[in-house]
Structures are given as C-alpha cells and as structure tokens.
Image 1: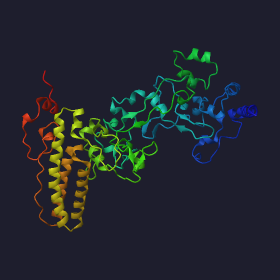
Image 2: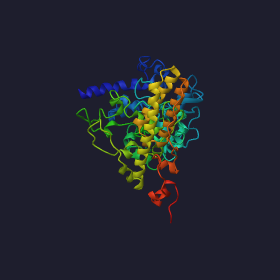
Image 3: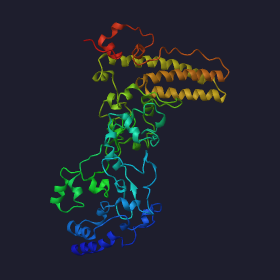
Image 4: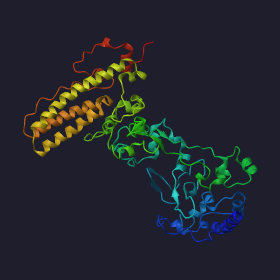
Length: 468
C-alpha cells in the first residue's frame, strides 16, 4: 500500500512541475489581488524535470516541500508583460521605506527578485519576506549604534501603545532618534551559517555538495533561489522589550488567584483583560509620557537602561495586592552606600510637596462649582495628581516636580476662570536638576551640609573625576 501511494505521488509530480496541472488555485480567499495566482508554476519556475522527479523518488521529497526551493530566474520576472522595469522605484513595506528598483545592486551578493519574493507552497500568494533584509543588513542591527535602527525604520507609527495601554507617539519622542534599544533591547541577529540539511533539499550528491561548498561563495550560483531556501528564517525580530514598556506579570506575581503561573497566562495582555491599566501610572512616570504634556521627560533611570526588575528585585510574590518593594538598601547594589539615604530624601521631600499641593487642589474642588472651563482645569489637575501619587516621584523626580508645579498652576487658573481670588501657591522649592545639589537635597528646608556625604559620593554625583 505504501508503494502504491508513493507511485501515485511521483506520477503526479511531472504535471505539477511543468504546470500542466490546473493553475495554482486561481482566485479564492485571499488570492484575488495576487495576479501570480493566475499563472502556472512553470511560468516562473525553471525545472529539469527528470532530475526533480528522480530526486523525489530517491529522497521521498513531496512537491509541497520542494516548491520554496524551486529556482526562479530573474529574466522570468523582468520579461515583457511582467516587470520589465523591475517594479516600482520606491517602496514602503511594513515600517520600512527603501529604493526598490535597483535594491541590492551594489551589494557584494548578487540578488534576484526571488531573493525576497517567495511563497511557501502551491497556490499561496507571493509575499515579500522581511528576513532576507536582515541577512544583507546584518551590520545595521548592532545595538552599539542605536541610530542605525532609523536607517531602515523611517516610519515609527507602527507601534501605538505599551502593554498597559500608554500611548507611545514614536515620531514625537525626543529620545527615540538615538535610543530605540532603550525599549527594543533584544532583536534577533541573522545567522549567516547555512546548515548542510538545507543543501540536501536540492543536492543529492553529498560528495559533490561538500566539494563545491567548502571555502566557496555560492551566492553567484544561487541567484535564482530564495534566500530562505538556504538561510534560516526569523533573522530579525524583537525578542524582548524593556520591562518598563512590556510588563510580564509573572516576573513579580508568581501565584495569582490560587493558580500558579504557566506559559499560557503570565503576559500582561492577558492579565489586562481584568486588571486594565495596572501600573499604568508607573509607566507614565518612568517613560515620561504624561497626558496634557507635550513631548517626553524620560527618567534618567530609563535612559540609563534600567528596567523595573533593576530595582524591584523581590521574588516569589504570591499576593498581587502587595507591591514588589524596592527598599533603599537595594540602591547599594549599583551605587555608593550614600544613595540609599538620597532615596529617603526624595521620598520625604516629595511627600511634603504632594501634601501641600493636594491641600490647594482640595480647596479648589470644594469651593469652585463653575463655569465649565474652571471645572475642566480642576479635573486635569486631579488626573495629574493621580499620576504623581500612583506613579511615585522617585521613579522620575524631575517630572514629578514639574507635574506638581503644573497642578498648582491649573488650580490657580480654575480660580481665575471662576472669578475668585486664588489662594497662595504652595511652596515647592527648587526644581531638582541632575548634576546640581537640588537633585539629591530634595527635602523641604534641607540644610545642605557638605560633610553629610563623603567626598567620593559628591565627586561621583557631580560627575567629577576621582582623585588620584
């Protein structure tokens, strides 16, 4: 019975290879816009029928597995009536924009249309694969030069939100130009090595295959074969995102709802079905993306490449209602011991300012009943206060201070719009500025005593080279 099935498959193979069989699934679902679906296989593919048939018999290769490896000469694409001008001049594909007609013309590797354009089997539509791009542009994927991402990804609007739903307007972010890997920090690098098993899909004489393949560039003799016929796929894609942007709930919550984590449900997009917007305010503070504020003020921690787990290192948290803490002592794993004291100063100073601003906001909410433009300002102030309190000022002290100033200003504007005399604005002190004393000394009326900290700490904090 097995031999009969094999014989039927082999006898049907010549008809498939020569295109004598019915055209590959013309029209049909998903194929109506692909004119290639109306062509026979032989219209594009070049075959040596006897060789292909014998190879199928020798190695039990099915027609489907052979289709992606079948050669397509460049001339069949550029012939009259097809693409004599080699297609459009400029192309926008996914998030990429590039010159198409002479693409790869100056490459050391000869390219044909089939290098990028292929289909998997039978009558499936012809597609343009992204993986061949990475094989040629391997040097442009280095995270060492972050600006190189923009050489290919000129359009940045293809990603709109973080895992928690925070809007990410890529085009307007001042730190995207030189900082793509701050979020997309792990991308696949193409493997240029070719496994021998790939060669065996077409070559049956292993002695000849090894003799030809050792120490020789075979691209010139494989122009009519797609890149993915030899090279592995998935050569370039995002494999990991900063945990600030793409939260993985299971990293902190090991057991929730009395169910242990599993590969099926730890991702934030699943947890968000019930816990929508969890940790959204923390994302807003760390990334510096806040409603009502133009541009972005990212935290220095985020710009330095820190993730949530860099500080929040507590593990095996079985209660989702208990925060995964970042105690001051945790700073000492990366910083000098004095930074643990600085964190306490930030928390104490920020709380004093929050209390002062909340008092003013509460008075406005209790006394102003209209008009609408006054109430809208109070509503905006309340939204920003929620971000400061839930997002925690220590995540981004500079932004938190600016938000408190903005809240105070909104309350004052609300009083003016309501025709009332605004109360005195709360005292918020100097804005913390990185590299200045106010960045660490954030407590209210904090005496700036130089001897409180060691000389080594101050030199590091102020970016002064250490003494020799």
